[in-house]
Image (cartoon, rainbow, N blue to C red; front, side):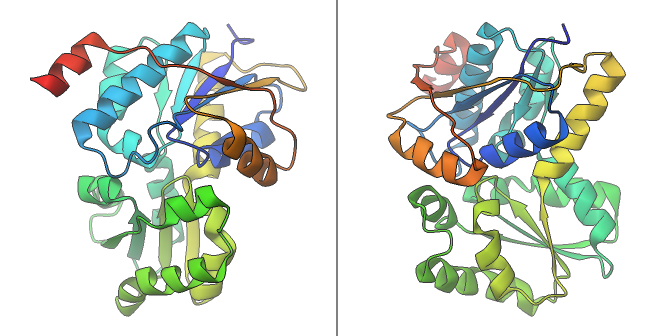
Length: 276
């Protein structure tokens, strides 16, 4: 069991931030990554559609005989994590609770900003998680839909990204946030731009590192840590892999080829829910 891979899925390239932290912290683990690039972004989709996509991704990863699934997508974690945890017999870890825990620890003034897709923000998943940890905390949220295409286009540090970040963050800064949660796994690609716009006193939180720590703890508790020294990784996408390879290699700092294009299995029960 310990040699089986950890499965990771996201709507596109953003989940590579989580994969990077898993690789750094758990060097012996084998990793299988699925980017649903044919249907990115998830953040503009309905909860039912996102749940259907997440089930299809999980079914694919189960076919790779993974020992754990990491939902490296905030929108999918918001809408589908509970369903996947009930549906699957292997552990399923999302990115929201780990990120909320870190934000709660870092926020001195208990005023936390959250940015994410429309889906993640409308789900109220982060405010619920933060208030469960610190009932008196104030949470200010803002959707930032243009960040995903900017990240996917490789424009994370482009002047356009800087102008967009100024517009998105202004209302949050007016509320005097002291911590900002990057509520989308694409957003760490924009860290230099966000850091340039934010005051130095505002702490940035992305859940990738905390999620990797949670995965390590869960696998350790289950006695399933791989004792190897250098795990292997495999990459799958649901559309032409050219852009994924370009952006992914630039972010991870090492080659990620080969990347295999696949079609996801359709979940009959989810399809029925979507058409009913």
